Each structure stands twice: as C-alpha cells, then as structure tokens.
Image 1: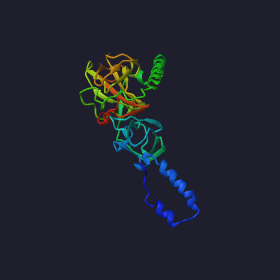
Image 2: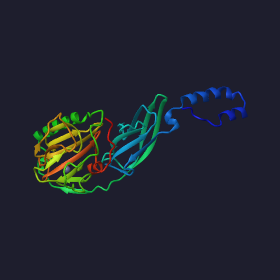
Image 3: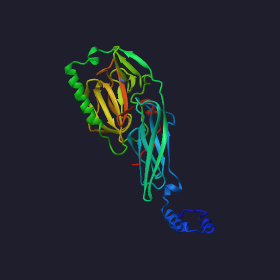
Image 4: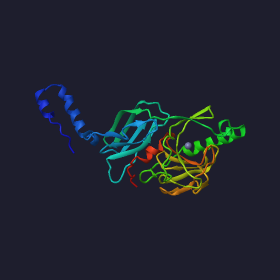
Length: 310
Ligand SMILES: [Zn+2]
C-alpha cells in the first residue's frame, strides 16, 4: 500500500538545493502517513437530493479505512451506522424540521482513522415545501385551557421532554418504515398551518389518517415503546423509539395494545384508532420526530433505507 509519487525523484535531481534537505524528510513522512481515505478520498451524498423543510433524509459517507464517522447537521449530531459487510460505507438517518427557513445550510463530516482525522464540509440547499393554511374549529377548552387543564398540559410537557430526551444508541429499525394504517392518509395534512377558532396558530407536525374508531394501528418499524398513556392534546398516545434519535408517535387512539418498555417488531399492533384528545373527528395522527425535529411521515415511508448491520 505504498503511495506512488511519479515526480518525486526527478524533481529532486532537477533542483538540487538546500530546500531538499527539508523536502525529502517531509515527503517521506507523507508517504508513510498517507491515510487510506486520502488515496481514495471520502465523500458524502444524501437522499432525497432535493430537500425541503420537513424532509427526512439519509446521508451516505464513503470512507475507506475509516474507524469512526461523526457529523453535524442542523446543529444535531449525526449518528452513523453500517449495513451488511460493507465497512467503507456509513449511513445516518436524519432530517430537516418542518419549521426550518428555506436556505443553504452546512453539513460537516468528521472521519477518524489510525492515520489521522479528515473533515468534509458541504453546503446543502433546503427549498420551501408548498404547505397550506387552514382554519379549524375545535372545542373551546383546547384553545384556552382552564387553569386545571393547564396543569395537566404542563405535566404532559415535562413527561414528553423526559421520554423524548434519550434514544437507543444503535438502530432498532430493520428495513424501511411502513404505513401505520393500510388506507391512504389525507394528502395535505403535514406541514399545514392551522388556525384554531380564528386565533391560535400552529404548524401541523403529523400526517392524519381518517379511520373509523377501532381500526388497528401498526408500528411503522421495530423499536421500543417509550410512551403509552393518555395526554391532554394527544389523547391516548403511543411513541416508539427506533434508535439513533428516530421516534414515531401515534395519537388519538381509543385503545392501547402495547405497554411502555415493550420491544416491538415492525407492523406489530400498537392500538386501535379513535378520537381522544384534541381531535375534531376520528382519525390517527402519525408523527415522525428526529432529535426533536418533526419530519414528513409520507416522505419517510417512501425513503428506502439500508438494513443496519446486526
Ligand atoms: Zn393531526
């Protein structure tokens, strides 16, 4: 694995000078210390190649000879995994929060090998997704909750902060994510700016599936149940940790079919759909959360993922 520098000998003969006194040891040092990735330079690519606010994405780093690969994207640490027996390719499942302003954002990848570190910096354009605005009518208690309700909401928030603050250090998912219900979701629901009773505005951070109460709801992928309880806005709510910061959330259920702490497999029954919590009709609200950012579930479902090495 000796790197070949074709002009080294000739240039030394052609320009004999004192400079070579320093040049020769410097070049010898470089010959002995040229890391594998410098001979086959490392690269980063991403899918989908057109990103908008709300896009989940997968970063692929080709880094022959790397021992570690880390990175930073959208101020979040990227957590890489490998697939099968390919030791040169590293993957990170990530995304762009639905609330991010369109623009150009940096990504930094850091590669460690026994020969030394290497860093890759790239700029990635995030385009604006065509999300719409709708006015909705819900019972007044959800727009201006009573002081008693406010206490419940604050307790829910503390619980969610605690539950969502850690995720498994390795991927728990197996293959690509699958829909929680067989029916098609309502197409314009994710990212919609919602105006409740003409006053309270929020961004809708999930995908709604219209479903008759009692319709079986399935886990989008393998993971661990980190939440299965009743909350003020979410109603009966199940959250599944898929590892490396990726969590799916199922809201407004009428019945639970899993318990907190339980390991579950892809497509396993998690509950029955309903209209508990802040719901203006029976439906399933399905959310995807990556390190606190909310991503478009429909895009995650169509993203082909490499199977993590076990
Ligand atoms: Zn919803």
